[in-house]
Image (cartoon, rainbow, N blue to C red; front, side):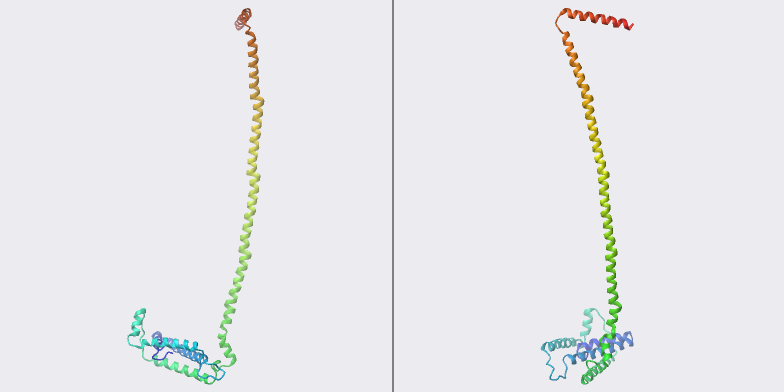
Length: 275
């Protein structure tokens, strides 16, 4: 409750003074907000705990009274700000500045609170705290916050959810589809390159291997039928020549004389033919 000597009254007086430094309309707005807060607090208290109860209403639970007592104790504790110098010390502690009061703020605030409390008491006496004496339709509209939640749902929530669903569908059908298509293309290219590698690179390797094997086969045939055959024939000729030469080595001197004579004749004929 923003009444002296409670802490809420001191802080409210400073808030109103700070608003008045900015302009009269801001100060009026603070007074109006204070009156509405007092009306709301009085209405809440009278509806939740109340001062008029009939036989059908049960007494307030102890925990409700304990909660109210705790809040009241805090408000009483903040009343220390009314002690001279306490508010300045608190301002220095938090690094703030206290607004200068012109003297009218506290009476104006108390007047607003008194009017709000009287309004709440009058509504309670008329059993009009729930509907505030307003017509049913007007009360329903106010209970619905003048349709602002419905308007926000239709203008903000529903379009936002629709846009989210559209973006999700776009992501599934376009973005993800593109990713899936790219993956399919990559897989197809991979299979194509694998097929080409088997038909070209691997084919070239196999072709070179076949040529090498063919060349090796030709080389082996040439070696078997050419080089080896020539070597074998040469060796065979040498063998025959050696055998024929061995037949001349008979150990008979007259045969040697005949060979020497034949050789001499052949040498003379060769010398004569050269001329």
